[in-house]
Amino acid sequence: MQALQQVAPLAEEYGITLTLEPVSRYSGYFLNSAEDAVQLSDAVGSTHIAVQLDTFHMNIEETDPAEAIRLVGERLKHVHVVESNRGVPGTGQVPWRSVFAALRDIDYSGLLVYEHFPVTLPTMATRTHTWRSLASSQDVCVYGTENLRRAAREAGFLEEDK
Image (cartoon, rainbow, N blue to C red; front, side):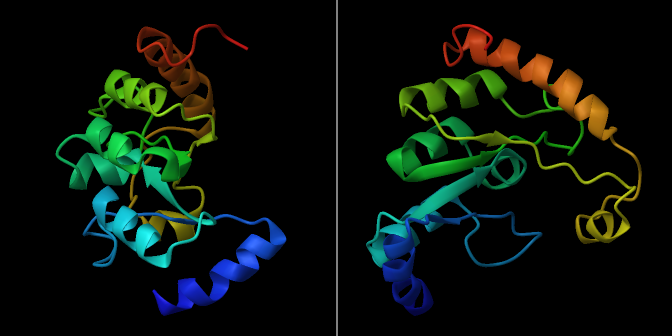
């Protein structure tokens, strides 16, 4: 926390927002839940120290990903949209309609970013324990986008395609 308190004034001065991303217990022991990230962000006390959520990690650690998003609320500044198996979004266990309904509820207007680790990137594949091809980057971008747009529309998060 002390390090974040030291860099927060610089982030404010330069108009930068730093985000805290909770990751699953399999990736680390520090910041595993949305609640952990909220507590740390609030303890630092700067609007330039915010929260980033990742649906892959939320699928493991959160009892209810939508409620976790609502808990983070206006602190949420970045979202990784990743399927439960790191494959094509919309083909696994992430409750996308609920996720988008929660994003709608908090008036989220930030980025939704794919985080894909194909086996063709060996260093990242090793770090993420990806030993087999789950999806091509093209499939994630094309079919994942189709699936997520549909879920976002159904949840009232996306009213029309732009």
